[in-house]
Length: 88
Image 1 (tube, rainbow, N blue to C red):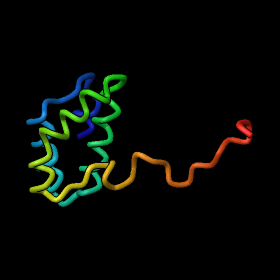
Image 2 (tube, helix red, strand yellow):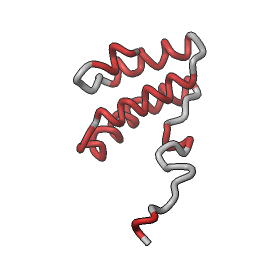
Image 3 (cartoon, one colour):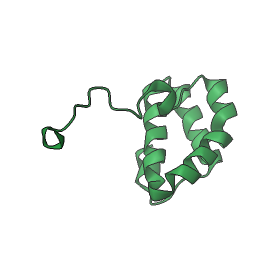
């Protein structure tokens, strides 16, 4: 998983699907979610076009394996974010 994340590319949906299946095979749900977060960050400035496409392609696999996306889990919003004292 570290090698996949370290490459300077966004993997194809089939590669992501195989990685998610491998994570679930060893019962590592957290790694599945962290890998989806890493893929989202790899999308860079085109995250609004690439990431929805990837999720659309992976949706049947995510449903089959019982994996929630980081957005479904609420990880896309900071939990304890405070306003900056400089913004007041």
